[in-house]
Length: 533
View 1 (cartoon, rainbow, N blue to C red):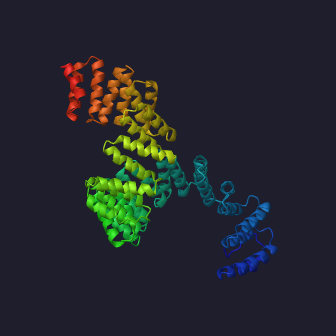
View 2: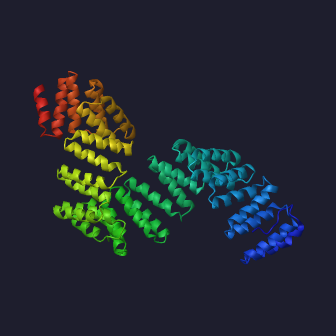
């Protein structure tokens, strides 16, 4: 509570306000409220006193009462900025976000300043109303030009994917306040995402210089260094972050996971082995140790680590699948199968383990058994997981049952219309069958929009062009596919076929020779080459 009463408050109210302040310091909210009520009797038009009563009620979590007091004040002073801001804060606490956003905007327009704008922007952002939040941030920046305003605008522009504008706004924030940590971190994040490692590194170091306690900035700096392959420097930064955090074990886990993501399983193993030894009862440590060992093909050690994950742990089903992989890799396939089947006997609704068992049969060329597992699962467990139908479609394709493969792929796309792999599979299947070629082209162009430059999808599109008789386009497209997948024999064969149609037999023969270089046992390609020679 403020001790000084603003000018305009009745002088007779001052003793009661001072008394309320003393009671507030003593923690006696009821006595403070009683004194403030007496002060309000002396000065009934005081917005200041109503705001103090509302704040005191709010501290006691009597939010509805506080809001009623503020509303009474606004009936007399409808444009009072402090009351409007207080109303917005109370409405937010009560979960009435839309009303809170409107009240905060009114408070900002009435002159409540940065706090009102900031609240209005954050509420709109939390409601997913990014455009509205951006407009508020623009108005805020024009009204005050503060670093916080430009930071809010930059953060929102980044969220909207308008990266260049976001950078500009964040730099404006830093022009206003070179030590604005949030703007420094946000700009560093944008540069890191864009692959501008040097800029990101410099910005994160600046954040740490401004606030050495910023553990998250240290972790992000380590991440940037790790992506550059500067492992020793990164580990030093991570160790410093851990020291500044007071030994927070979650940082160790995050480091280990990051090392796994960066395909550094040996370093991850070191991290998780230390964690497992220090926290032997933590299943996450054993699980992640097992993952890092499995990635290094240390199957026996991985089997031991994963076996220490108890069945009660959240990680257990995935640990079980990885145990099966380790067993299979140790030529203990029967044990792997029994492990998966045993779990499914008691947990028939476990979709991930079901898919693992399907993968077990697929790896052995037992496609029919894989289909039986999935069909049995789908009969009892309707799913929204497109991957289940995609897997089923692949198995039917390998069984050369193209009608059922197409049916499954269509179902996968109903569940996930933007799955580039299902789009590619269906498009290529149509091309192979020489049917629905216009539809195949549409599917594959969409797949390429989702995964630009993908060599296999580009090959499928080139093959559609070939089937349509558009041989020049086919050859050009297949060459683009080879830029991404220069050692794929199928793409070289497809290119050879297109070149034959164009009458360029010498170039076609060279393409077939490249296909044989990568698939020397291909009788189909050998026959085509012999026909040209």
